Length: 80
Image 1: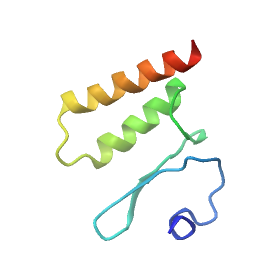
Image 2 (image 1 turned 30 degrees about the vertical axis):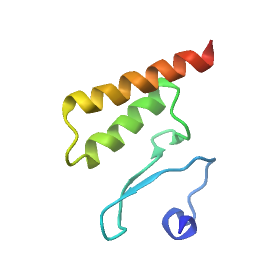
Image 3 (image 1 turned 45 degrees about the vertical axis):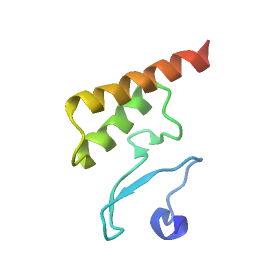
Image 4 (image 1 turned 120 degrees about the vertical axis):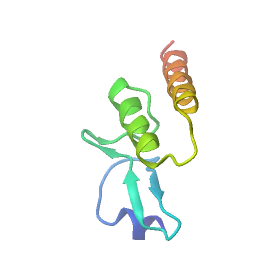
């Protein structure tokens, strides 16, 4: 499945793709600066949020902000 979805794109893991109900890619974790992996740098978090905002069907703005705040807290925690 990963080979079919990722194709020839390069980058580390984790690699994430969000698909529609038919398995067609809507957006992947390949941001402007490459694969965001586990998003901890500000540009990675921003790309992940772009992924969420672009594909969210039932999430509210509050839900989306909760995700962003949690990612930022995690990034701060692992950086000490």
